[in-house]
Image 1: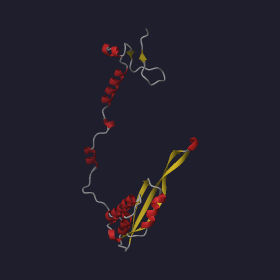
Image 2 (image 1 turned 180 degrees about the vertical axis):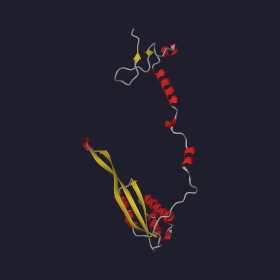
Image 3 (image 1 turned 90 degrees about the horizontal axis):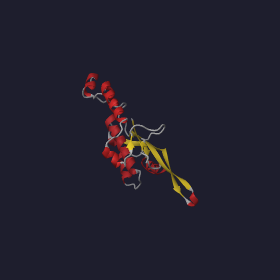
Image 4 (image 1 turned 30 degrees about the vertical axis):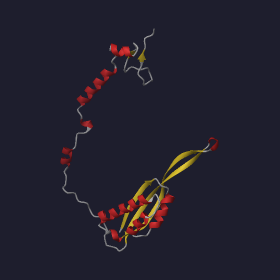
Length: 196
């Protein structure tokens, strides 16, 4: 029985991750985790999490024993590459490639237990479609048309208003402001100034 787990878009170069992948390939999972714990490489934390994820998949989905698992295949492939620039002499710039990697892990059993399929997950209680519809909130599109028309009318009425409040005009130096009107082709609001 094989159990898979994968790690995508790890921001460590594949060359550095392969050093640890070669270290644990073919080992039993408990000894592989112990090997990684005593490594001083940056990728060890991510690989330990990946191995623990694969172990959890094996225990929960297939009812396999953790002590009967080994790492049969681990492959590290190149993923994305971020390109950054580093300034150099005479106004030049050189490219920095910040590489990423993706790791695929396959666990297999040391002694075959005979399990062939993943166990089926059971729901506690079947749920009917009517119960789902009652519990959900109404969608935004189900608003009444009347409410949306009233909101649009209010917005249009406010858009073309001219500000005639004397206190506001005084703070602007006596300049009129007309909201909502603009010159052709510009999205800015137009200010009408008094000449004089």
